[in-house]
Length: 166
Length: 132
Image (cartoon, rainbow over all chains, first blue to last red; front, side, top):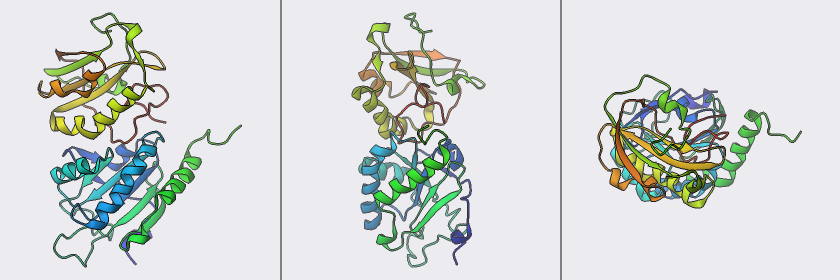
């Protein structure tokens, strides 16, 4: 069983973002639900395709008080270029030092060249408690845009005190 | 209060902590109250998208903080970008809406830039401040 399968809450990752500025995941969440994606890196066609989908849904996140974050082993300057090429306006975090690969049990052993993350998606409550985990090693294991919407809706319903009509 | 006499509200985090000395600010502000624009207008939404997409990455580590200026619960009266050096201000996307002026300042502090992709305000606080 991978380390991540036993987690109920994600560690408060401390990593540089795509501009090189140090970030903590809890600061990034800022009281909002989070969709967090561990991604191999810019070179992978599956990641390129999947992240183009996230660019589509960012237009909903930008008005929905929710955060969208991608973690990869690409250095910040590579992430900045990849992000710009995608047209993304969400945050990339760089784990170029492979700091959390083993702690999370997400080292992809089948890629011995790039030593990347095994793709995985987490939907998180604002305090980083895990709502749902998706194993994205197989592309179809990744959350669809509709599943992301469903999870953000469930988390928002749980944390927004004025969710229900009086 | 701006030099024009307009009273505006910034993201309060930008002036909450110990100020940093010797900074540069690019102040893009509505000349008069009547020229303010609703935050919900497409051009005001788009400039926030541009800030997330390329303005903040372009400034890199020189960025100290960035705030829009709220006139009231609805209206946008400009933005201030604060940096350690007066570079790239000619590219400031906020200057598309209101003219910019470069000033030296000692009143702002470091604030992490917005993570994105949210461009909406939180309960009327000047973007990117506030939280629920």
